[in-house]
Amino acid sequence: MSNLLLLRRRLHTVSQSSRLNQHEHATGGQFIIRLEDTDRTRFVYDAESRLYQDMKWAGLTWDEGPDKGGPFGPYKQSERLDLYRQHVDILLEKDHAFRCFCSKEDLEFNLQDATSSGALAHYPGTCMGIPKSESDRRAANCEPHVVRFKTSEVPVSAPDLVYGAYKKAEREDNFIIMKSDGFPTYHFANVVDDHFMKITHIIRGAEWLISTPKHVELYNAFGWQPPHFAHVGLLVDHQRQKLSKRDIDNIGISVFRDTNITPEALLNFSVLLGWDPSLQNRPHLDKRGRMTLEEMKDNFTLKFTRGDIVVDLAKLKFFQTRFTRDLISGAIPDPTALSTRILKPIQSALKQLSKDLSKIPSSELVAEVVGAQPQMHISTMRKPKQHTEEYIHEVLKASKSSMVNHHEFIRDNLYAFWPPSTLAYKNSFKEFSGMNRIKMVRRKERIVNVDISKVLRYLRNSLQEVPEEEWTLENVGNKAKELADSVTYYNTEKDTFMEHGAGWKFLRWGLLVGMPGLSVVPVMMLLGREETLKRLRLARKCAVMQEEKLAVEAKKAAKLQKLSLLYNESMRHSAGRGQNLPDDQAGAS
Image (cartoon, rainbow, N blue to C red):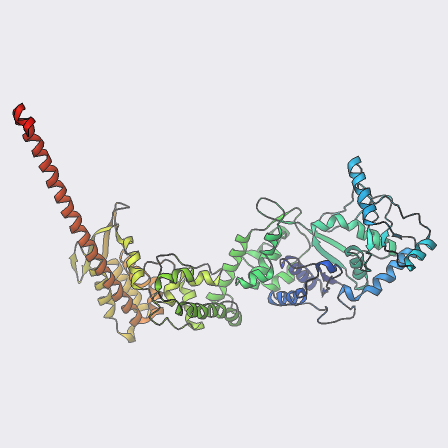
């Protein structure tokens, strides 16, 4: 076997595992899952099952592991304790290790003493001189102890494929390799396992670079050939601060899965953290803004950029948008992925939302449940469009939504799935307040100062002329354009006449209550002739009500203004008469 790859530590992101997986395929090696569960204080009972679930969801496959077995098992470190103890004994026999019987209190005292004097906090070597016979006897008597490795007197260089040779300024401390509970430390167990599992490459975060000299010393003590190390930069935020536990928890695979991020988008995002194909004469890989899994496998290398890696989730949004758009448009011809990754999750969300909405007594609360703007309301009294995968696909093709999140998509295209309520039209009618001097050409007749309700009636009646059997994209598109071009209005906010398709605004308001995103003609095809005409009729009815209300308010305002003018005029006359009276009459008055 030429190359065996190792997955280690908890997967906060798919980043490291995707790199290992791509390198394994690129070099013809094998990918191993090994569970490092020797730290019993941090044991999580369901971590193993969640690991497999996350890996499978992300499309990452492995050749060996606790669930599959293999020639180098067992694959849980807690089941390999005999192997570790045997090799601790080997180091003790070769005088490369020693037992330490120091109490925690003694070690803490030495640490404080070294810190206060400004010295390095190294183990003081208290137990290094204990004769082996005495050490064996005390251990046989079950005296608590740990086993420490005797490190080199001079710093050891550790080769790295990314950072080159790494060497500390000071020698390594005599670090612990076997704890008092009989479990090995991370450093020791992994070196033993890497050797016996024939691991050739280890890819891990740069925070482990400082520990690599320890591992090299252990390999040297056993006379083993160290594997190749490649340390990848730390993941940091935009302030270049190391990600906090909260940050890490928010970029876990399960989080992305639960928020409907597609595995393909996540793999693209992750594999490019610290790796840039354009810097390796592979600019063609990202010319489409994404790579396929096969392209990742065929072209991946261990030439990472040095330094910290900023986690920019906007790039994940970009990949999610690009991948879903290509699936939706058919640029990626994968009906199964389209269905499982996009259509079915949206369908499930719509069904759940329908159940939630059915329990709401008032449409006033609909926006709160959906997460839409307060002025957006749907009619829960009317049956929504059928939430089939085919219909959802058509909405996706007509929508300009980024489709990063399924719930956001539903919110942004709410009126494609539920009809607007009367309240929605009422609340949004104010957006027409900046219009006046509306003009309309009807059968070559130019009509000026038209009410909005009359425009809507004209649009509806004209579309009604298109029979059901001729309700096609071409016919409806031509008719809608003709109608849109026949309406103009003066926009007081922009101080200009809106021409050349000004009628689209009225059509959009009648069909979608002005909601942006969906194109008007595809919406009419989605809704069908009957629903299109029904919405325009309701929109006109609401417009009439609002116009009548505004007319009443305008009459009241005019009447109040007239009364105010009469009152002011009366006051002026009264003041004038007072000035013309004699002084004694003016005083009497």
